[in-house]
Image 1 (tube, rainbow, N blue to C red):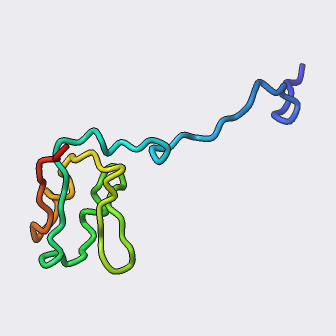
Image 2: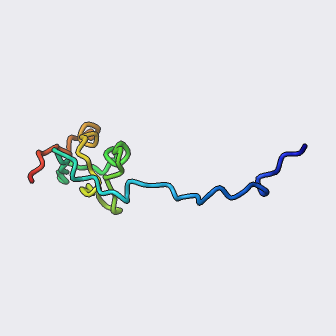
Image 3: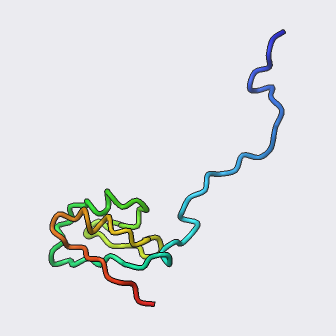
Length: 92
């Protein structure tokens, strides 16, 4: 007995698109927020590279924080080689 190929399989339901965190603004979870001192920033992009939530953006000239998605983990501040990013307590 020959098994059916993938083209002969019965439709078992819809295939839903993968979910992304862009659908959910998670920035209101944080207790600390990163702030960039642009007089110290060398645009090395370490903050952009290491941010686990892709909340550090680059506009072609400088990096900035998208606070809608930043959870305040502090990885960007810890990885900044010139200490241009400091964590400040969030004000509500």
